[in-house]
Length: 275
Image (cartoon, rainbow, N blue to C red; front, side):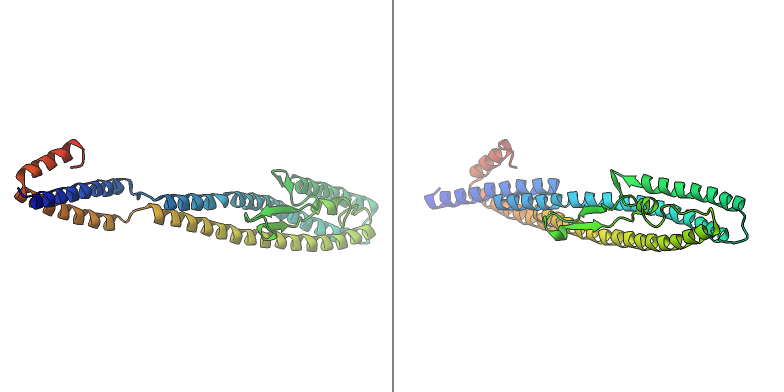
């Protein structure tokens, strides 16, 4: 066989081996569903993974805040019901026809409700935070860039403060005059509590928006990772079919030009696990 023919056969044989390596790579990708990434792609995936993970902490902070708001809202619902009873009782106790015994009876029942409200306010605590007792409020992490925009503050509805030093402090129904004052205080307190409840509802809504935004950002990073890592099965199968077709043509050429070289190539591919 001439040198030119030998070189040609060797060239085709090399192409067959190269195709076989590519075929095995593509077949492996079809099984795993993942591409073989370059160093740059691996670095990009690592960066995107870190970005996606970075949203976990603010999302957890928002969830904790939403749970704390929920506890406060549940307590407020019960407190408002008791205050409605107190308002009715106070209105009845303003009657000038009541004697001292009736007033004292009203006041006894009234003070029991006052005590119950105090208990509800102080027990509305979750993970050390109480939005119905004290003025500290709650600072919530809603981002990870350490700027003011990555924090959200929730104002407290200090009902316990109303009970101890505020509008509801010392209210009583032991006389019609005191009952009238108590009634006025209850109305003012109810207005503050209603406003506070609306504030909590608004905060919860805003936190939900921020949580959704974080979920979207995390999803975008995850989708970008998938776009880099995951194969397109249809495209890979098409590439595989083209490679196998080309390889078959090359095999046929070698078998026609040099049957011995063809047999040796087949044996080499078999023993090397490439065929």
